[in-house]
Length: 331
Image (tube, rainbow, N blue to C red; front, side):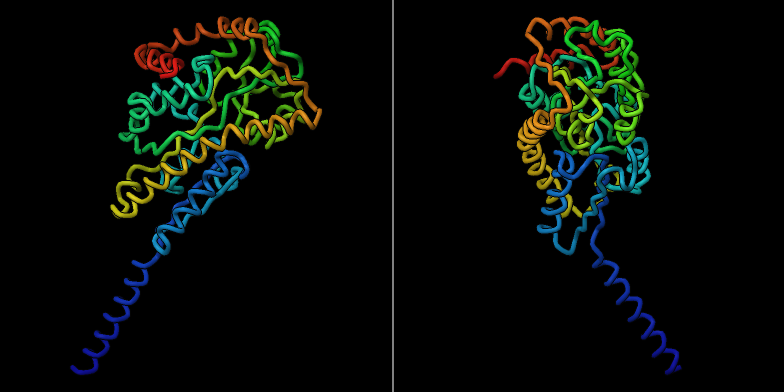
């Protein structure tokens, strides 16, 4: 009896040691995104990794996968829901199949500037949208700015009629499709990673992006004209898998919540500076002519695209649109 007892004890000790070693393994958070590391989103992901690994040393390990290196534009949401990644920050246009209300952010000329976007996102209505998809296993942790969108094309766009017949790349968003149809252009859905080649080969003639995306993806090299339209916002929602998030140890989750709030403030503070810096670099590259709209021209574009608001009012909610419009008035 003695030998088997010793053997059993040895096995129990080995299992216990293995269990302790396993318990000590850090929680791995895979953060996948589709843009370059020096863009606002890319910098935000790196800052999240830095702070999480500093403050939760040994408890959390963050792996950042930029530039569609792990999952592309069309696959990252599915990967999050399957648990293959734990954090992503898709553009707000990606959420329409999970909640129609987030389509609000795609409405053209809704916000006058990025400060109005800030005011709305910090409002009760804006914060409520972050939690609106938890039944679909998606928890919003914050809004990250990329910047206001500019129109680019291989012909000058000064008036709405100039866009007629052009093929514009759009994200998979019904609102953005209607935005271009409103000026008699042809929207073409295309993943972000394919845009440069699409513009280069003529599959599409134009696009809409913040300055940082235009510069980082070298779109200015294949677009002769960029109109500073500021017609919409390209923001991201930092999201996680709800089951994963709720399953974290409370102390870890609490610290990560603080970190995401800090990172969000920093990303949004830096985004405008990064965009303006990239705008300047595009000017210096002299590959594209930058067109500044007069107030009258901007109003023409706004009037041409505003019927899109009414078209989606039923899905988004008239009260939500009204709250967003109210954010244009500084408090």
